[in-house]
Amino acid sequence: MFKKRRRAFALKEEYIFYTMLTISLLVMYLPIEFSKRNKKVDFALFNSIYNSWGEWAIKAALVLLGIISFYLAFRILKQYFIINNNPLSKIRSAAQGYVEVEGVQAFLPGKSLCSPLTKTPCTWYAYMVEELSSTGKGSHWVVKESGESSEHFMLVDTTGQCIISPDGADVFTRFYKVWIDPDNKRCTEQLLMPNEHVYVTGVFRTFSSSDINPESAEKNQKVLDLVKQWKQDYARLLQEFDVNKDGNLDKDEWDNVVRAAEKQINGQYPDSSSEDVVTVNIISKEGRKLDEPFIISDLRKKEILMKFHKKFVFYLVIFFVTIVAFCTVKTWYYHTLVKLYGSTPPIRGAFLSEPLSK
Amino acid sequence: MILGVVVIVGILLSMVAYFITLYNQLVFLKNEVLKNWSNIDVLLKQRNSELTKLIDSCKIYMEYEKGTLLKITEARNTLVSATENKDLASLGKAESELRAGTRQLFALAENYPNLKADSSFGNLQGRISELEASISDRREFYNESVNLNNIAIEQFPEVIVAQMFGFKDFQLLKFSDEEKQDVDIKKAFS
Image 1 (cartoon, rainbow over the protein chains, first blue to last red):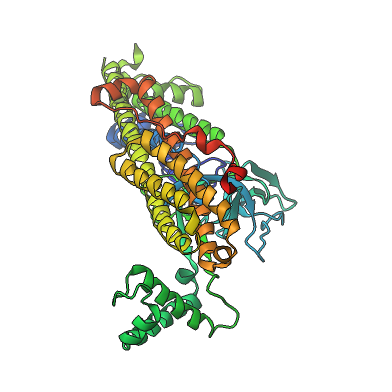
Image 2 (cartoon, each protein chain N blue to C red):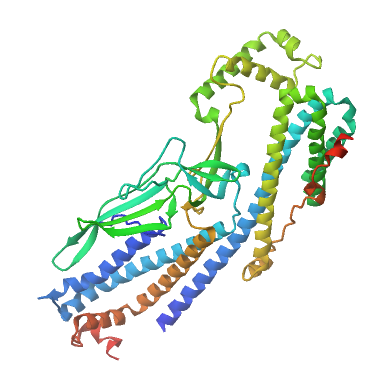
């Protein structure tokens, strides 16, 4: 029923809020809908529905909305502090773990990507197609198709490069386009463009070629096997590698043994040499703590912080609005009904005989 | 009446949550500084290990440069003890001396073709240069996190939480001017 609708600067957790807001509005509307007769609200019936279950359903929805707003406000504030208090790292020297990096976006070598709707070359996209659905009382947009890219792309800074895995990230883009196509469908597209600035916070990990290349792993195993084989003839090992002639192989001498074994094994692979150890840096969501935001954006850090600050204020205000609404729901409901349906309802029954008449 | 009470409760709840968030922020900053210090420490240890190998390689060829090798060894030992004692002032000085020493050593190595031709010397030289670049970056990063911590504990409203719970400032890691100077090649070759 509540299909995911992508917003330009919405965090993933915020969908809980939007879902709860929709439920709350629906719960508030139900007593009105149930008490309608000939398109007019029967206030006696409305009173009875409101007094039997309406009031508690509305209050329960408001309490939930308040809790969610409060939680989101302080979760966002915590994330604001994490982003603000984490200095930017350089890829060359970034430590393993949660980092913040900035650079330029690029495609992975030999790869490219185009957005599904406008066919624009991009490093990341999200899109949504909505259709206007008409019911007897009105019309609203229904999501027909949506999706986002999970293709990896590169971040290049002045000291190095790393792969970005966007799966699970909150992506904030400057490019956010909404248009109506010739079939009267509303299309939305968000893009990250190559050669543009990108800011990423996430978990930085470095893999060596042996971690990711099966051939390297196989080579390492062969080196280990060869060293084991040489150890069978220890006297010969000493003769060849015991430089200081103390009858033992110390750490450096063992290193030379391993190097010699690597050299011999590398000789079996004609296209490789002992110097071809490649390391790959990746930033992804893997290993992230619950509160650490995973953000990819073409906005500057300051702009992102501003968005977080506004969100904090927004949810705090919503929290206080729900508190006030919880306490004044009866009065507020009455006046809304009068405003919506024009006539002043007769003052009778439990609901309307209360302080409203004052 | 009820509305007033509920709103006051809401405000108090928000204040408590804000206070907790501020406290957690200061804990986060303190731990970041300690973590970033450890990240420098890891690289210093790696570089020291590479330096030992480099000195061993050089000893074979550079008989007449014992003074330079001794200078590097002494600076390295000072650096190790300063790192263990977390003495940032001595560490900065020793690091500068060590860098000056290694640069002098690499310059002098040009006079020894056999040493230059040794592939392990080339590899070690490259590895040490890489590590030194990374140490510089991480020092910058460490100083940035120290700066954020020191600003946070002095600014309002964090200062209240910092004073209540005794959060302290950290010292910046400074390298002396010697490190900023260019290598005197003439002096190195004399």
